[in-house]
Image (cartoon, rainbow, N blue to C red; front, side):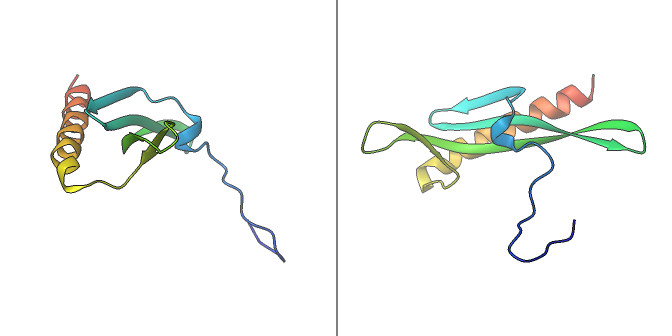
Length: 95
């Protein structure tokens, strides 16, 4: 896609925010959402797994928010969620 002037490239595929995850892994306030990107490669439909990991918290107004930054106490939870997602994907591939 060629850009001219002040035009900005628009994303062609759906963003992660627009898709529902296939599976969600949780450990406390940390969650990992498993998504699949679908790609057409020479007429063959292929799926590639991706995991989005976020921390959920309430802001000062009491509204739920998400962030992709983690404190030192969140790191073991992040590792546990990543490991659970990995185990799920490896087990699923072996079937």
